[in-house]
Amino acid sequence: MADQETTRLDGKAVSAKVLDALKLRIESEKLSPHLHVISVGQDVASNVFIKQKRNAAEKIGVTFSQTSLPVEATLSDLRRAVLNQNKDPSVSGIIVQLPLPESLQSHEREVLNLVDPMKDVDCFHPKNFGQLALGQPVFKPATPAGILRLLEHYGVETRGKQCVVLGKSNIVGKPLGLLLAHEEGPAATVTLCDKYTENVWDLTRKADILVVAAGKHHLVHDPGVLRPDGKVTIIDVGIHRVQTAEGKTVVQGDVDSEAVKRHCRWLTPVPGGVGPMTVACLLEQVVEACALLTDPRNKVKHLFVENTLRTGGRLTRVGVCQLLVRLEPGFPVAELNSKLGEMDPESTGYVSLDDFLDWALAVRTN
Ligand code: GUN
Image 1 (cartoon, rainbow, N blue to C red):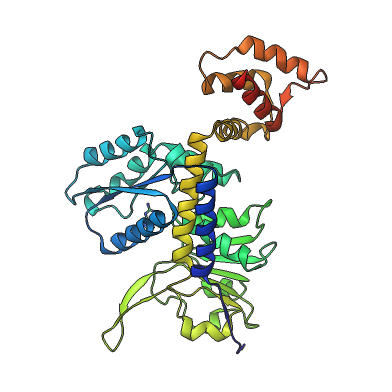
Image 2 (cartoon, rainbow, N blue to C red):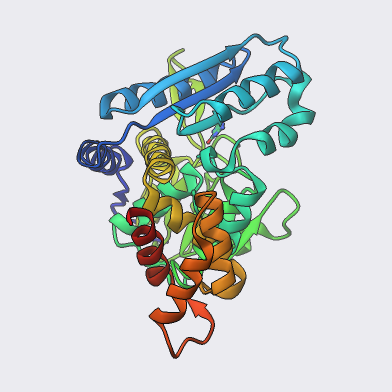
């Protein structure tokens, strides 16, 4: 059994770097990002998360606003709140804070589907989740994005590694599994586990990277469930407020860090690990959404990617014209079509993103 010093994956320090870079981006690109959070009721944990988002947003120049509905709000109140923010051109990103109160929980999917996909910074809309699953995400859900950023920052190897994720939620486990498995990216071999997984500890014992996102306080507490050579990287996504024997309230995770810290190579602390990375990466998505909504080049790019998923990033000439009409009704489509023909006499009938961007913007400025 290993007995070594573990290195902490310091989410607080890395998130500060992400936020600094975002602040610079907002200033240099003269962006006006605006995050709107819709909450229902007064869930104590949710209020803490919302406050963290607000504080970080305001520090870096992201406008923050909130619709706070009472716990007795109806589905139609909630729908109206979402549609109002979809319509508001000043809002770049919308979050419907989860969990919803019990009375609305059965409508969660319906409500999340109402959020404008271009403002869906949580990546909960089926369209965005689908693009993520295809390996072409427009938005990345904040917690998985934060975890990937941490691994990247510390140079934790993922390619070909055994990665075991405990927890299959739509917010963390599933999208994280997809992102980690992406072959042109981290290229990890991912095993997603839930409470039905048989012999789960045999799987964790083989893991190079173990992500614990099960929502169970100190689920992982026995070093015997980790690889015996002490080389595992543990990512703890849990956040639990618990009372100590002395009556103090402390925040702890799904992993008992005291019990395992001498048996792993890397470990995220709680607090100060995944939590701050989630906030920073969420704001990154808001800034990205703002850029997509305001910069014509980004909008063109977004539309192109969206429309070329099935053709591997290529577009037919007809497709180009259809896209441009969507961008700017009244576009001189016939003229454009003939120019496209001139541009590439050897044309196979397809146009690349670069050519498309040049065309779209040239025609725009003529
Ligand atoms: N509640 C806890 N985490 C999240 C999150 O990432 N997004 C939303 N919308 N609600 C949450």
